[in-house]
Length: 73
Image (cartoon, rainbow, N blue to C red):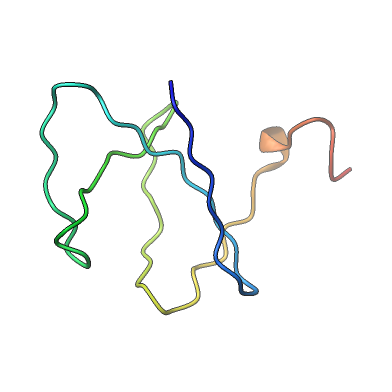
């Protein structure tokens, strides 16, 4: 598995893990037709928040049971 991590400067941060399955053809992205739209990795089916490029994303507080490494309490 290859992992690529990138960050753009600014005050808002969000992270998604996208995956590419070998041999599968993906559709072009609507906002960047030269790039492909890869699926988002999810452990359970969950609706993704709406987000438009150039706008602040929605508030998405994590539930208590989602805290990792005992952080936050």
